[in-house]
Image (cartoon, rainbow, N blue to C red; front, side, top):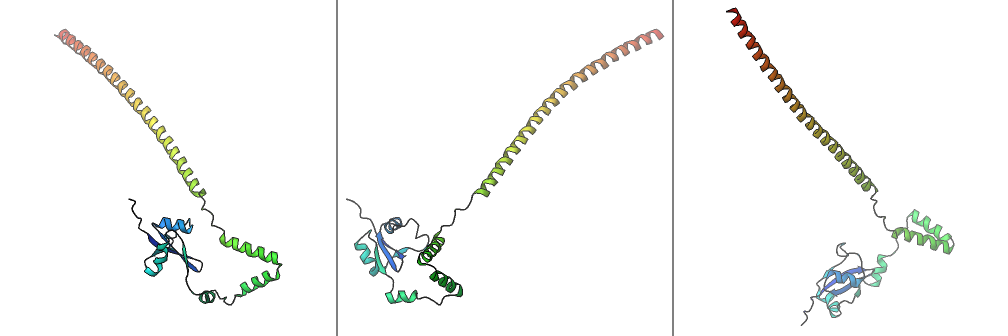
Length: 195
């Protein structure tokens, strides 16, 4: 027997309405609303627990139920135009004096400018910094290898020099021993001759 999924009722504002949907998860609610953005993370969607507000969505799970948030009069009062600023008045009079197609084009451009997404931040500076680091690392590794090679060469040179010193010392000590014996023999002969 299939287990019945527990449903919650979620809400998000859409224009002058609140859109309610009964769904098993936030992800399912976002899908029902047709949203690619995480409205919950942005704080514009939430869970509804009020029994009066949840009744209708729970009767039609997965279906988006729209409810007007206020009366029509309240909505019109909220959007009543304030007195325009001088800049707005000038822009408005300029647009209204323009031919209809031009005014429409200006309005379309203004809407596009507002809706234009911010460009993705450039990686150029990061790429340059990473390339500098890579070059520096390669250069330092090369210098370390050259120094290690010189150290090995110096170590070989020291060993060879130590061996040469040892040979020369032994030869010099042998020469001293021979000269000492020769001198001792000469002294003995001299003493014998004196006697």
